[in-house]
Image (cartoon, rainbow over all chains, first blue to last red; front, side):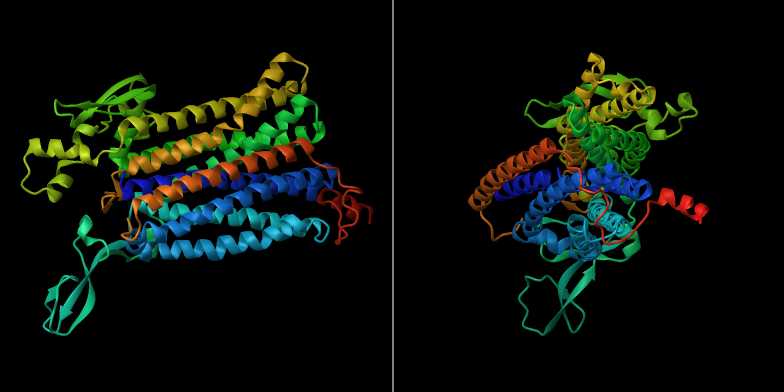
Length: 472
Length: 67
């Protein structure tokens, strides 16, 4: 394996491990706000005990999250220096804001949250909890802004460093000149794809901070990810509370924690259905190749079916070159077309929406700009080079969807049992089985968030910055 | 990718990262399990001993009515 592949594995390993923890802290932060609010509102010592306990869990996860996040910052310098230089003008703002607003806010108030139990009044302690939770959310916001810019870059232009002599004539940076020259950044034509030889000389320069921040995918991806964090945090509380109930331990705290967590989990899961739909439609609009890949859609079609479970394999020619994909999946007829159109009130008409397949993605005009003069047959051969790893993203995407659907069902069932009062009958074998399911469900959201993250990043391939900078 | 690094260096760092992450992961699970086993510890005297003298928000209306 070459140094590039190894570096990608290294970054994938560190970010995957790190990404297990921040969703828990963000979600737990919301749970702590609710517990502290109930403490201030009712004065019931039960909520004080609960808040103290869950703050300890929060502190533990926060510490591990910070420790695992630090190596990534160094990797930008050690392994990805060219990339850091290329995006520095864009990422500098959001990442500085993350440092200023998020870390300062979070770290400052975290000390008050962890050590202020006997030093602060309940209201000030509640305020500290809110600030810590807000800081955790801010961290996610600025990282997601930077990541969303990679998915749907906006508000920038590419500029190349050139040597310019007095007459205005421009020379490449590696040209040896006897005449005096200045180094200037020359704007490059729109739609230019950075080539390997450009690295170190070409960079993205910000034109509009607002457009870069609010690029086409920021808001919908932000809603999707934050809700995933709330689901992760709430199911962690659900799982631990269910464990206590099964063992008959800390019953009072377990009941109160389970009620709060189930309410947050159910609301978040239901909102996530809306946010996920919006995110997928954004992918259909801005990254159609990714949508075709995650659904394993070989050809464009109307009444496109939505895959539930299955397998997608590469189709290769006699020489082993990839020429397409083979789908073997259980599908719901027409549902993908309906979801892409977003017209749920007229499903029959919506099912007529055409969803583009990998046979026409990326489109011919995009490829012709990069391969002028190429014939249709040549473009068909080139096209698969611009596809992500379809068999893998199909599975990661559907794993995320399967877990998300299961969590909606589990949380709704929990609310039903809570409302009917049956949830507290811990002698009933059925309730015990459900509580055991809740314990196991605590591990599902981290798997779903990892699967979702893999879908996002692997689905972006072969691009590092969509249609601007390739990975290799 | 940066020109200054070599494949064996990255491979070594991947192995070391893996070892450290296994250790951190196990430590996390161990500490989490210990905290869960202990559970919430009842605070002696509830909110007494806190710096601020306060009354729960839900009871404030009662105080005003009585006054």
